[in-house]
Length: 113
Image 1: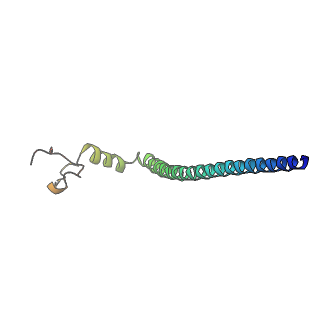
Image 2: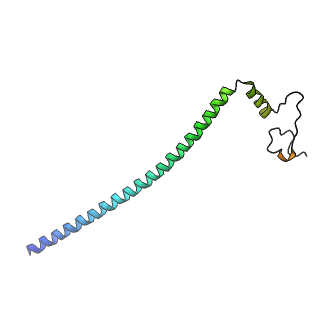
Image 3: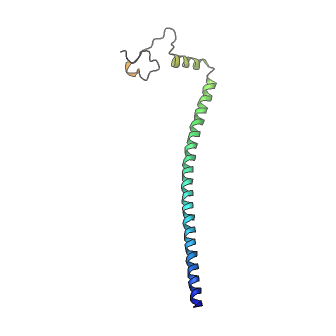
């Protein structure tokens, strides 16, 4: 009888070890899957931020060039024409009604035609 008890005890121990191993493997698998998903999310975020950085760097370069160009008379004339609608003396401006919406010289309000 003593041998039977020992065999049963060993079988229970083996079963317990198997159960613990199964839970350990399941836990490790779930943890690894979560880490893999997190890594994918972080990679996507990294690429998005790198794209934003490139866009901002391009904008910085354009603004730097504009700052260097801002002291010239050409720049002053461009701002006067585009932002303030100014013209040179004896200059004639022709307005195309079809392009009024896109025009920077939008002199007439939308309601008048």
